[in-house]
Length: 123
Image (cartoon, rainbow, N blue to C red; front, side, top):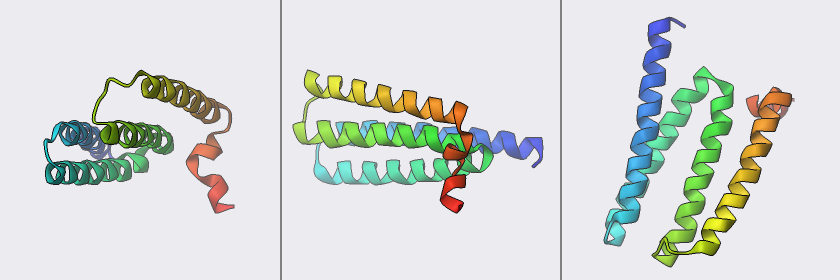
């Protein structure tokens, strides 16, 4: 690929990641269910588009974005039903779980890159 194409794909891919994060924030802050639904849908669409764009450039981006989307999904699934962020047990659980998962992913990206590239899925 040409350098300009790669730079523009990186720029717009990470711009979509930022848009997904903003939409997630707006979904959590929405005062009614319909607003939450619309902002959540926009976040999912932005995140999916970002994943598709960035995954074409670097295979390890799939693993990193997968961790980010898992973290966002876990935060939404725990804190939205609770309707509060003042829930220390959930923050502790998320910190321990995501730290262990991140360390495992980093280890696999360094020591077995085929695992993160999806090569095993094709065998």
